[in-house]
Length: 148
Length: 148
DNA sequence: TGATACCTGAGTAAATCACTCAAGAACATC
DNA sequence: GATGTTCTTGAGTGATTTACTCAGGTATCA
Ligand code: FES
Ligand code: FES
Image (tube, rainbow over all chains, first blue to last red; front, side, top):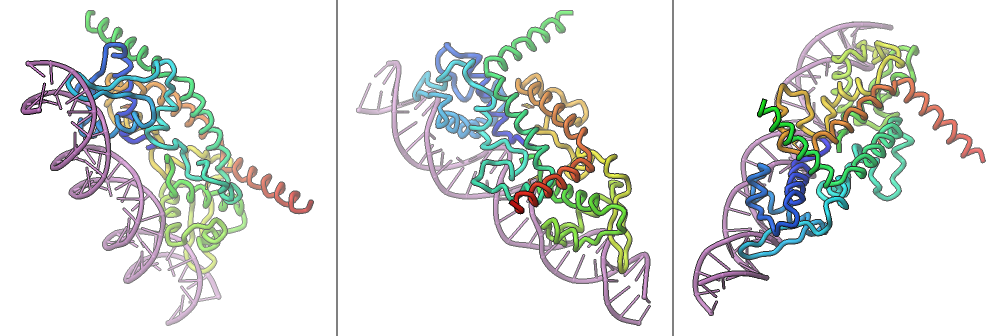
């Protein structure tokens, strides 16, 4: 598995923040409840997101977290790489300082390089705003189904 | 990282076998040396590949391993899935019996489903024979470079 | 029968994962 | 300025996975 809970939870949290953007700070306890994330674990993820410059936070009563940039300017790629580090499917694909000796010994390198590039391109093209929109659409569908 | 050394070593070994197909059994010690794989570890990988039906082996002096099918009929996808299990980048994408409740709670599901499908399609389209051919090409290039 | 090679399962050190806990620092309100 | 709320940080932990090794066994050939 390429993504750990870190990436998954982190994106969930960001979707939540994006959904409530402009309504003032959102508290971690609310995010945790709504998105089913252990609260004490979410702490660390929010800290990481803040250090990465995606989120700003205020302390004290009625404090919480909010997005720094508009959600349309945040790509899924940027988010996930901030949370997970490199998304490379293989160690030898990481840009880890001139260690391309592996290619000569291992013949599947090029296929994975292709796949990795495609993956990154796709992830870069998806914005947080799009994820929120998708979720809203999904909710509408659910309501319609329920009403029938 | 999606792939562990298991998948990497396993494919390396298979490339080696494909390269020497038709020349009788290849010994694990040779594979290990040529492909830089710990020999005692390779044992387990070859056993797994045999159980998965990719390789047949003969014991005793001048024994070893050889491919069961022609290398053109072995896809990289089949190989890797036999070695690594599912290649799903996220737990919730595994076909693990009607657990699609995750989609309703997590909004990035669909993007990864797309990426996963593309990845599998690409991997299915690459055969072991192609990997060998690529490696041969690479060797030729290296020789030319060396000669200049 | 003995040398050669594969086969198998147990074991293991190190790393990573998915958290929890506890102490602290900033902030708002009364 | 005391109090309670909320974020902040680091340390610690059990479970799991990774990447192996090792010891003993089995089949085959000469
Ligand atoms: S070492 Fe990179 S693909 Fe094998
Ligand atoms: S739970 Fe599957 S993408 Fe988040």
